[in-house]
Image 1 (tube, chains in turn cyan, yellow):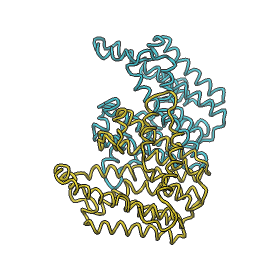
Image 2 (cartoon, chains in turn blue, brown):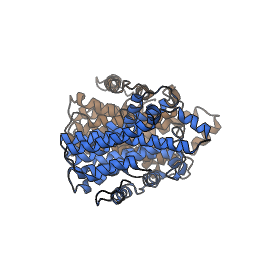
Image 3 (cartoon, one colour):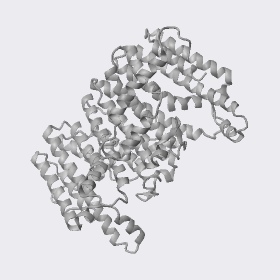
Length: 300
Length: 300
């Protein structure tokens, strides 16, 4: 956490927005008839203690453009979190990362079974899009929002990025450009879409959309660089786990390609530019600036 | 095939529509940069020789309401086929039906691998919805179409029905009502949505939508009953496969719950009512009537 420069308390702000989104998710995902494990699995994985960064960015971007949009934007933020949860459930499956735990709790396929996890992911993706299609906004905005989200999470975005990441594993000679492209697709595109959905819903003009695009591209990349640095640090702290380390070293990361210091500098520079881009478009949002700072200062 | 009562040749009609849909799919799904297996897998599974029943129903329903809609409707039909292909790829996965072959060709996870098949299914679902969001129609219609499709394929429809089907396997005492609900969700809802998408796009009025709903619900159920009957017949023809047969007998089907003759009669009655419902709403479509007949007369 950065030292508080204003009265604004980021922690309280994040906690409050998280509750708004989760209350909506609880209402939407409460198990339905006919009673099967499907709704249980959807609810279990959607309410497992995530940070709701994407949903909060959506709400905060909307507020930055036009205050008081919450009742319209919350279903959008919840939809974004449903789609994000789909990607986590499918990522955790045995054929992908084969993870047993997520945030200290059993992953969906461990808690239920693989087929239920597969279907729960599919259903969350579809319910997320269904939620987007039913939000109280003029139809042209809904259509634009659905275009933005589906472009960001499909083969041109998140899913395509996951595929590149799988193919890059154990591949030698991944370049910085290739690494950046992969992250841009895998995590950047959807994070950017989350910001833009809020902005579009709140009626952002072209220059505001442009500024928020730059903001979200930069914080997405900064987030990834810091993730890589934290991974590397935890590597150093666990010397002796040679096998795991060797495995890890095959993977291209920012600190490995750029060096630790240059990578860290790049992350800070990206966040600085993100905030400047808001300022240049006269988007005065302490919240968006603090979220950008939080992204690089977390876990320090 | 029914005896031709008019000059209309169903086989030629189906072949012609299938080509229109597949040409659009080829254009949309041609592998893109960065080159990964993802686009290859999406293309492979989408162009594997399916009947395109759902896409053709969409085109035919649109023509029944307003002729000459093809150039607008083809992308909708292609989108429907993308979403249908997703359900097949995920259904074939080892954790679901674990099928190695579909239409005599290796299934997606056998041809590529499980993780590619999982992601290709996700991406086809998303690209399908992206296609729907970009079709050349007024925004309110696009929103309605996306609501209809997502309601039909999510937890309230297809995906929910797949879950019920999984939970029904090896369950004793499945009632006729439960069986019907399962099929209504698993296959009926999306088949109905395919017809309604075409109808909405072509500007169907309320009574036409109602008639086409009845038509599609009936042919969906008839399709399933005939499927069950064909399965049973092939069972009898393969006497001796005791293990498979025992397994099979645990599963509730229409002929097992109703008896062979009553089930067959029900299918014919459903198709008769489907055609009557079109007639009552003055929807004069030889094509839709012939497709309804084809559904129960296929493989005889």
